[in-house]
Length: 636
Image 1 (cartoon, rainbow, N blue to C red):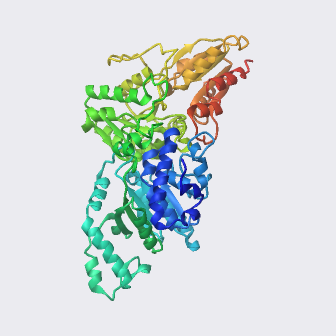
Image 2: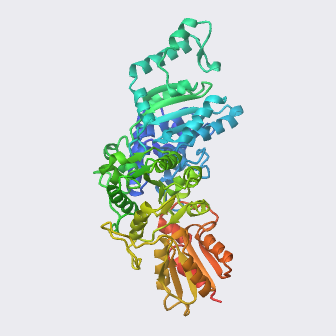
Image 3: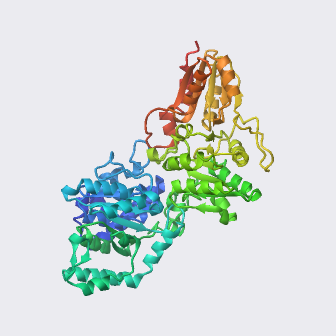
């Protein structure tokens, strides 16, 4: 498709050549470009559709990249990428070796900071603003998609109110994260947006005061003492959290009126002191299917632009891991009224929405607040409830102190259900769940397991209900495997007694020369690799054990392996340092065994974005890579 405007825009300097009255046409082309591109190359659609007018206005008014734009979170920033010299490469977005899924300073000078996790923009932008104070350049934090529900955003806001700075915070208010937002702050923003008469009066009064030189900008907008009557009148304004923190507040205003945004930003950009511009947007704006179902169209996959039909991928014949979690949790909760579900803004993503639909009073969506989710769970557990707290592996990192201090130290029965563990694919380094085994293992009282099959996950969730102390169950993204080597002890799907035993692994294959130890879903790939080596391994036979538990480990298996084998191979879909391989090495050394231990996993690196198939191949953790590694293992 030929675009009249955006095909000529290779930088914000080109955008500035467009007359203000023609900016709506630029926005329309950007919207169509993004819709067309993402219909074929899936990504985060609805969020970026909601910020197109804001993005155009920001680059039109500010002197980027000298002025810094800090996005929060980065899936709002597709239009930003297109306007900053990446239009012709946008078709590679989120693809292996292509454009980053989020903003990344390594990719472009226009990306001021990385933005994969929510709520960090205010803190990062404040640091940039203070450090660049002498340069005279502006710094803007764009926070939205539920990120204001995160505690870090409020920490940054508090600090912004205390330090001398000129930070502009643009609050992109669309009442959504992936799912509709919950909580008091969301309702607070609703109250602000419905105060239409007051806000119009306030803005007009402010502009009049500036025109009459009654406001001293050097004193953050305080009315000069010489005009006590106006000062007294304005001091009776309805206050809000921002003005209460001495941060000047502007808005709310229509976030889809690009000309209005250019006008307002031009008026306030050089005001001294911290300020907030509150804009109202609609997630999915301009594409009816995305507007009507914002949760589904947050990241819809491939779709037909004309009719909005989402195209299903091949091989959808097994349940997703999170669906197994959601169905099992509902069944457990129906039978035990003490069981509750907690999620930080991910009910649909983790499938806790299944329980939420039937037992809404026992599911708590706490917003993008992982630390709070864990400590809230700890409080529930202390009072005798059994909380199943589901947090993606990459986001659980944000709650580490809460796990240690509020859960493990008190040995509370909190079940941490760690979704998206391992390689997650196209969202890249900020979203891979590679650290959880390593950072959870040293914590006293923590118990850690990982299922290889859907049946294992169901069994672990049921067993966790009956356990004591903190339990972590980690499982990957995507569909559960069609098991060609099912576990010999399977739970009943009718809710009967499970045969899965606490702290016990299982031998999947016997062998004489090399012992292979795996944990989690990578055990399926290893099973395939070992089977494919029959007849081409030079007579070397491999024994394969699925450990199931990282803590406690099955010492019966470890003693057997230590006695029988001189060479051990461990494989995990996580960091090598601190995970299963490290645990096996430590145990063998502590118990007087001296085998050669070869550890397979992710070395000391952040893994880029790409499909899971491409990334596992790059890491040599796919079937072919594991075969190659096994063939290179010395027997003697």
